Image (cartoon, rainbow, N blue to C red; front, side, top):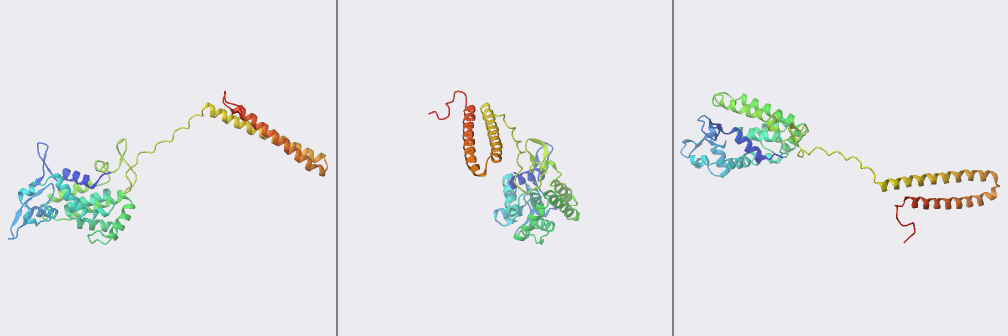
Length: 315
């Protein structure tokens, strides 16, 4: 199943680079009006460092547990993709407490929301959608509420989160969002994390062996299982098994015939003889019937024995 680490690799490589004419991407960016690009030193001077793989100087400083003003331009540019992913996991997934919730498409979308707009804001939006107190922290009550929200329908939850995220971006004034450039980039990114995006959702719900189709079962839950294997058709019985079954049938028929004849004879005897002799007749008839049944069984067993087998009782 898709992991948080894979999600960060995909999102950073897809969204955090500026495409160049040669087909590559430029991952170090410096937007003058983006406050995340700047740090302030002890003297109050603002220093523009830019971002690398979407990692701001503040995020890098938090990850390294150092003051933000100690981050240099060279250190900022030295951030690798692998380090950016680890910063994402530490600062934006485990740190805010998303790892306490079921990892699923809705939570991946929420983590990505927090990457760009702050984890507390993303958590508060999810809390409102789930009916929890929107305090921006993930505690036991939020865990229970979000689990129940996801259980009511994973696709619906992801769709609702995308709607709320787009509404948040649209409400940002143009002068705050770098003259609208911020929303122009982030609204398509929010729409990327929708159940209808087959490119994204195929990482979560592919049908094994069927390209281009998605599993329709709701999540969160266990990973998608392979389609059930049809039960094999019953194999025809072997010759010796068929002979044995036929012998058993003959045995039952013979027993039924003997029993039926004995019952008929017993009724006639009771009508023809006095009562005192009935007991003697019953004993005699039972003995005869028993002898016939035992003899019949012996014959059936002998008939069912394989060719060349030793007769019953032989050593």
